[in-house]
Length: 563
Image (cartoon, rainbow, N blue to C red):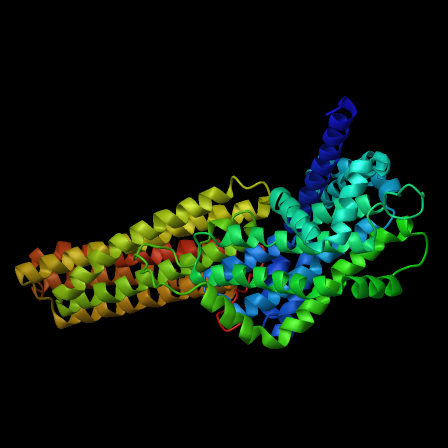
């Protein structure tokens, strides 16, 4: 290989690398500034397939990453927050939304690329105090670098028009579409970005042939490569589903089936499809309009494919259910239900999943508190054993949640606000685990009471019962406040905590009166006051959870299973 050829390849790869870096930088900036809004849009707009398509297209168009949308959806499916038909409709929309990148590239923005680079650089690096402006600057900087990369690739490809070997290869692709499909698939699998490979295709097609007017590859030669790009992009979903739930694997399989069947159908009608695209695209010399033609072909492919499959989502669900059968692997009690490590790169979604898992952990401790009450007041050893066993599960699950939350701090796309939120959730995880610890303490006192046959007065039992009820109310409301980000409930917990403190002091005084009147045995005092203290501490930790909710800047309504 000649020195010129090596230099051409390295320059082309450098331009591609700059394009991908710019694309990722732009996507990260958009995720930081609009990510949580996109999660809420998915929550609201996925109640039927058509709205699911709209939601997927909108999220992907805004985030400039079908991978971000697809991985997020797979995470929600894996967590049981989104059903398979809903997820498939969002994936359809993500395929439509990702075509916006090709449309942007088709504009002649390359001449203004450095303006975006300079303006974005100034905002990104010199406006650190204003977080939103920093993210906008990052987006503009990435957008400019994206087009700088395109300019480099475009200049590098110009000499290919004089290469007989390359021209012969392009002729083969035109004559044998399968070669183009394989080439496009392989390129996207390697690069892990359909936007990047389609950008390369647009630049290649915009390179003039020997006559200086016609494209070196032509629209009919570009279409099979474009179809292959669409198949190759499904590898991201497949990789994201590895280690996930059966539903997550089925969502990824649906993405593959969707793009593969579309390619299989369209490949038989390439001449007709090419003519249709030419009719709806701007007119002019081929090299000047073919980038727009490819962008339109990409959009129409995904639109037609979505219209084809949308009425038959039920059938696609059946297909992927056959492809990915449920082998029924039993989960361990300490296995997380909602956490998905593939979503960590999207903190706005990962935080939501972590909050759902913490809510589940909170419900476990609520069950422990109910059992602790039955164990102590009812003298039930079965409930004692249940609390002690559940405490081990709570500890194991809490450690996994903490590890998941800690991993978020290593993600480059996390914002300062999100980092503060994650820090708060780490404290919540510790608070919930402490509630479980105090339930275990009460169960151990119950065991001592049963073993020594302690019997309290009816008045003492009544007082403890009321204290347990207040603790259960606080625990239940703290879980609801955490799940829904409800500040009103959180404020009510603050009031209940004052009531709990006052009640503990009052009950201690009542107990001393009973001791003085010899209505209660002194040997019971330690157990009674220790149980009372543990109940009061549970209220303190519920109060801490309420503080965490109140410190959030905005309410974050969750996705429900029905949505």
